Image 1 (spheres, rainbow, N blue to C red):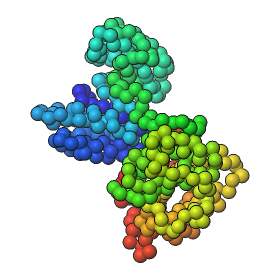
Image 2: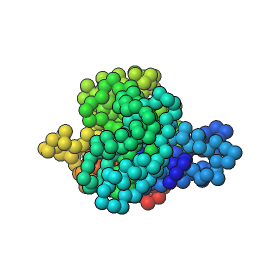
Image 3: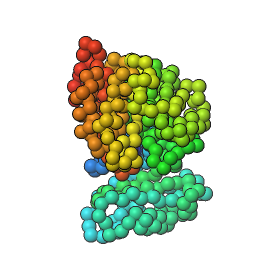
Image 4: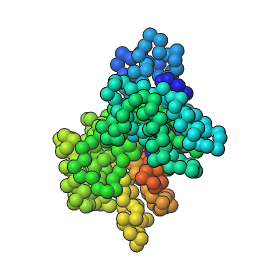
Length: 383
């Protein structure tokens, strides 16, 4: 690895969606003349889930602007948290891992842009080591300060150096994103447990809605993350949310207003288990939602009954060929059993992701057309 290499972070399980989004954005850049096939993308480098490496070939840069187009595209991504301009990879082979790591930092050219630049060092460490991330940050920071003459400023820094260690692989780079690309909305209401915007984007991609869906429904809308992401992706669609908790309804409406989307996004006080009574048949292109089917509902909850009522409503509201994408917890057998009793829904795709230290599955269901023409296999699916 060398010049023109970037590390990207996302939720483990969404790496393929990141690559697809990146290539789409490069193709869409006006007048760039980019040969997208010249972009190399590696998912899960070093076996690390939730990470990708994107790079361009040096011979693709002659006479063009591919380097800046790639970086600009990365910084517009919705499926990514952070973008790091990669500077160096070093495999640590000896017994004194910290000494080798610091030698790698010292051998990396980190140059301040201006004499007044300040910096900080951040580190993410995974594996077994005789030290912690904070030790890497302190020791590597001393090396960077000695090499560059920059002062440390943990809050107002202008240069963000990353020194990450994954088992015995050390990477050094410059983080280009300050707050994270997922922080794209003004949250006036944000509960302690809320869906990540990157996960919401991934779920919308898995719905494969095409360019012009008419109506997207989130019946468990919570604070409105899916509603906002759907409105950003599909500016001509009607976006509707619902929740039975009035605090969530009021909070989601506040978030929608803060985004200036109240003319396109509506939030209703409604129970997702009553979709049959609330919505006309075949009136929705997609149901994208994150049901709170977990610890918060309690051990005595009849999950199979809950899934049955919800998915029966999904079967009712979806147009033929429409998609439902939702997160499910550990009780996945309930989904399978319920689908066995609902003849109008077919499982199209399942994948496990990691978010907030838990591992839910994303289920993708499709409303079967009357003649069954859309009965394709799960293996054919792609975001």
